[in-house]
Image 1: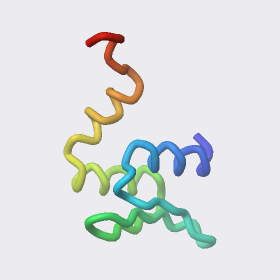
Image 2 (image 1 turned 120 degrees about the vertical axis):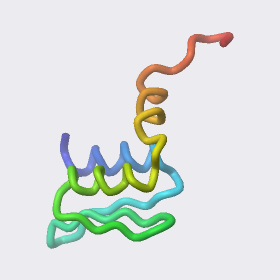
Image 3 (image 1 turned 45 degrees about the vertical axis):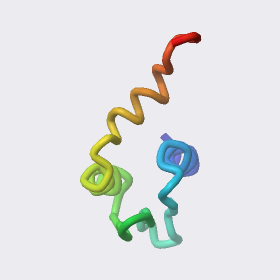
Image 4 (image 1 turned 90 degrees about the vertical axis):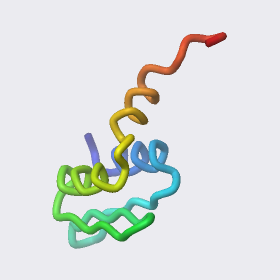
Length: 69
């Protein structure tokens, strides 16, 4: 996934966090804490520690409830 697309996806999935990748390639998430990581994978691993429902949020985004439920 391209960096920009991933940043948009994360912002949509976690609106209470701000996400960025700086000119040096450092990934950042700013919310209840500041997370800095050397890769997108490391950022997601760290974010999962602070957002225990991350998996559920992702599932809901890709598998929304049926209409009328």
